[in-house]
Image 1: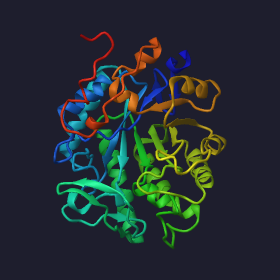
Image 2: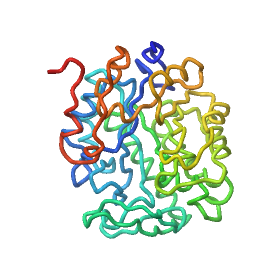
Image 3: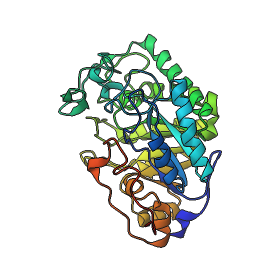
Image 4: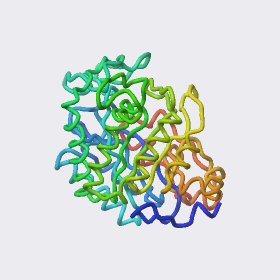
Length: 358
């Protein structure tokens, strides 16, 4: 598996190895969505990853979906706090991108001062609940965005990208996956609009591509990544033709020359099946990366074959801050405790020991 420990260049990003740490929601920011000292420690511990992708980070105020403790990047206080994270990661030899995110219909009024969430269409997440200050509650019906409001969303992403640069990140990733706002526009199960942002794939992909262009205007294409999950049914998502959707998005992003394209290759709930990596690889000629359930052995085979430039790992980095070293040595991988993934405090967050720690 030595190929996973070889350097790779993704756009303008030069990585020391091909083991990328996935964006992992951990809910350790404060009540004002400001990163904390505990987050500095957490990311620093994992700086040996070829690249860290930060947890989903709010680009605009008032769009909380994770109990009010996910970080933001829209205030100067948040920028200053993120500077401590990036500075510590860089001091320890790491590289880190900020994942730009809008929760869309997954937001809840009880987390956002009573504000109704927004989405492409007024369709609620069905048969699921979310954590709120009043306990677990069903998701509410979102308000369909007017076409005239969409430039404001795009500008929100552009400003967030500029703030990420001020915070010292090495680039950004646009979160267009897992049933949040951009993904809701992409997939026809949630996008029932007419007009320029609804209907055929070309229109449904318009928001993502306009956001991508806005973010590239800040960073340059070589430091911008996009993540999609065309099969994942998380957050009550579906699409009638995920392969065609993947192909169209891949072609459009290929033309823009982004640093790398991340594809979630399957469905967390195993409801929707299919091969979306093959059309992504055929249409996107730059650096393709993927995630969801890879073993190191499978990852090495995917890189060796030329299918992927690098592989994204999530859960292994939770319980193994030194996951890269463990893969290199063949040491056992610690299973993390799901009960602590989103619970405040250091337990299950920064207290997993590295190899040889006493």
